[in-house]
Length: 585
Image (cartoon, rainbow, N blue to C red; front, side):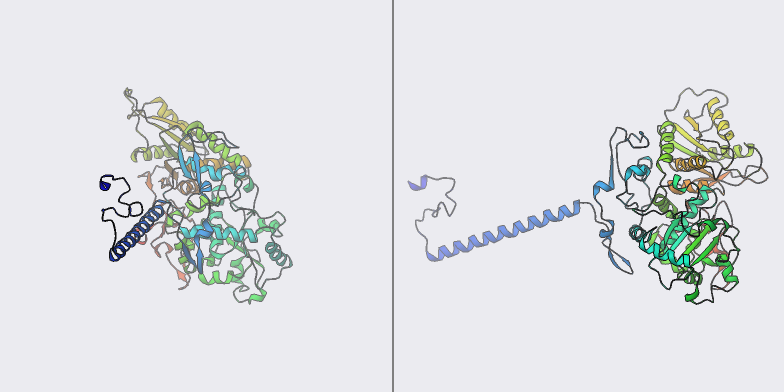
C-alpha cells in the first residue's frame, strides 16, 4: 500500500531515497548513483557557463561599437583616452518644441538626435552660452557625408593640449617671447609659433587662416591670430581654455602693416642675400616673415620646398601674411605627404572639416543667421543659394550676368521655367526658397519679379530672398563683415548652391556646407558664356597663385600634373585645387 501513496517529491533522492520501492541499496548501486549525480551537476555547470558566455557576447555586440583602439604616431597612443567623452556630451536631444538659446529663441522645430561634437571633431567642455553656434549649428545642417578620420581627431586633441601649454601668457610663451624681445635666437625652445596677420577681405581671411592652421598642425607650431579690427567680433575661440588671439602687447604687432618683400626678415629676401641658408643655427634670427601674398616672387615661393621647410623648422617665430588658400601646395611637399594622407583620407574634405572645427560665428552673428533662416528659409521644401560676384567695373546689374544665371538654373533644372502664355491652374505643393547674395540688389529684384509676375510651368512656388546689398565691399567696416559672414554661413545651409568664378566668398560657403556647387564661368567681353556653368570636381577652394617649380630638379613644372589629387581649377586654369582620386580611396 505504501507505493500507492505517491507524492510530487518521490523522485527526489533526498526526499524519497527509495523511489522504486526496493527498500535498500547495495554499495555498488549507491556509488553508481553518486557518480551519476556528480555527472549531472557537472553538466548543469557547463550549460550555465555556456549561457553566461552567450549573454555576454550578445551584450558586447549590441552595445555601441568602440572607437579604434590604438593609433600609430611616433609611438602607440590609446585613442580612447584622447577621445573619451560621455554620451550626454556627444548627443544633442531636440524635441518637437523649439530650442531656446541665449541669442536666438528659434531653432529648427524638428525631432532629431544629432551628434553635436560632429563625430569627435569638436572638443567637449566649452561654455555653450558663450558661443551658441559651436554646438547648435548641427541643428541647421544635414548630416555631413564626410566624417573626420580617427587620426585627425587624435591630432586635434593633441594640438589643443599643445595650445593650452604654449598659448598666450603661459610660462613657455613668456619665455619664448623674451628671446624675441632681446633679438637672440634660441638653440631650442619648448614651443614654436606661427603668427597669422589679419589681411585682405573676409573670404580670403577665412581661407588663409584655415591654411595657416593646417601648416601649424603639420609643423607642431602654436597658431596665434592677429585680431585685426574685427576677428574677435566675428569668430569664437576654437581651442579650450587658452585664447588663439595674439596679445595686443606682442612686440612686433606695430610692424605688421609694414611687412613686405623688402623687410629685412622676409624669407625670400634673406635667401637672395644668402643670410639665411648659409647661417649657422646659433645666429639665426628669432623670427622670419613669410610673404605668401599673390605678388610673391620665386624666392618667397621656395617656402613650398622640402629643403626650406627643414631650415624653417628651427625658427621659433614665423610671421605669415597671405591672401591665398595654399593648402593644395602643402600636399606637394614630400615631408608632409604621409601625415596629410592620414589626416585626410578624402582630400576634398580638408576645408570642410577644418572650417567646421575652427570657424564658429559669435553670438551676435549667430543671431543674424538664425533669425534670417527661420524667417525666410526654414519652411521651404528646398533651399537654393545663388552667390553672385561680379568683377566688371561699372554699375550693375548687368544683363549678361542675369542671362547667365537664368540659363544655368534652367539648364541644370535647379529652378523651373516660367509660363509666359497661360496660367498654371494646378499649383504644386512644393516650395523653393532661393537665397541670393550680392553687393547689388538688382539681380535679386529681377529674379524675384520674374517669378512673381509669371507662374512656373511646374506650379512650384519660388520665393527669392536677399539679406543685404551693400553695393561695394567695405572690408574694414564691422557690421558689413558681420553680415558678410552671416551670408556665407546661410549659403552653406542651402541644399543646392550656385557660385561665381574666382570668388572666395563662394569657396567658403561650399566648403562649410559640404556642397559641390554649380560654378558660373567668368564672362568675357560682357557676354554670357556657353555653357553658362558647370559642376565642380570637388568642394575644395582654388589656390589662385600657386608655384610652378620642381624643388628637386630646380626648374619649372606643371604642379597641376604631379599627383592625381592636385589638379587645375574649373574657374581659374592656372590655379590648383584638391580632388579625390577614386583609385586612392
